[in-house]
Length: 404
Ligand SMILES: Cc1ncc(COP(=O)(O)O)c(C=O)c1O
Image (tube, rainbow, N blue to C red):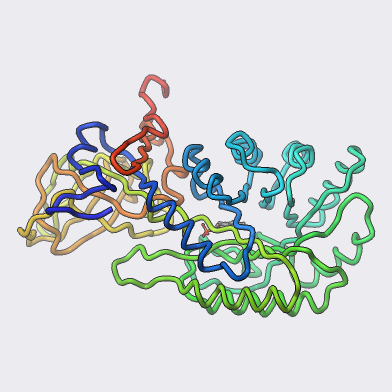
């Protein structure tokens, strides 16, 4: 995704062609970028050869999931809906892990019936529930136990999952206690130790701490795990300051860990696979001048992309067609929704924009469309996939009629 002769392109398709074909706002993905990200991920971890289970919560479009599955990845799901979807797409049950703090009996029953690789449990109550369900089915269920390592991922509080105050996983002490209590059960087998400390992590330090806690745990625990699942969380560069995650360093640490503990590794990346594969293409509806800045009112709103409102996330905005005329005033890019938080980004020295022009919000592939909603009775946007010179609608825009 880049400029050619000042015009933005997704692979071989120009922004002009895209906006003539599809009504804004819409999500647009690059298949090439997705394939490249997956290839790079494999390459970084080539020594360890982990089972890479794509985190479906970050993007659950079936067509994209199929590309991901065809590249050999497994899936990390967090609901029966996601589980049914990945099975329909064709992911093999032995490459699926099921995470989440509140899996209901019907969700667990379905997962047990489908014989997925792992159900990662997060409380003693959940484990007892699984034992009862598996007794009824006269089967043995492979479970992972999710440890809360009490590590600060140094990311936004709302996407931190591995601190003591977060709802996820079991404390060191409780995990040991539960394993000792249930390790001889005929209904479950502790097959995996799992951890996931948060998302959009940009430094290796939290992972190093997490690995130290897990090493310590494995020395104290009385079972041998076949797998250790380190979750996902590797961040991407949303800003333009090129602060990127050092995959090589993490890969080395994880490789040392797997050799020392003689276990297989699972990783659950979402954002690092899909985040930078998409842009949200939007039109300037109005420009409202004010003494201190101009409001650039877009046709995309927080119902299309909620990350800025929800997490203060900053998605870079770029023009569809570059020009050299800079605006003297600051631009405040906002949506049309009746909420002050419906605002994307403030930018200084942006090129001068006119009403009707197209702008591009970058890096919206992860936690973008999946978090969109019908707020203000607005239809959810379309998703388009570009593959070289071809475009394909991979989810339709809802119509107002659908909503009424
Ligand atoms: C259990 C679990 N695994 C994996 C992920 C994926 O994280 P990311 O998209 O940051 O790689 C998440 C998201 O927070 C998660 O909760």
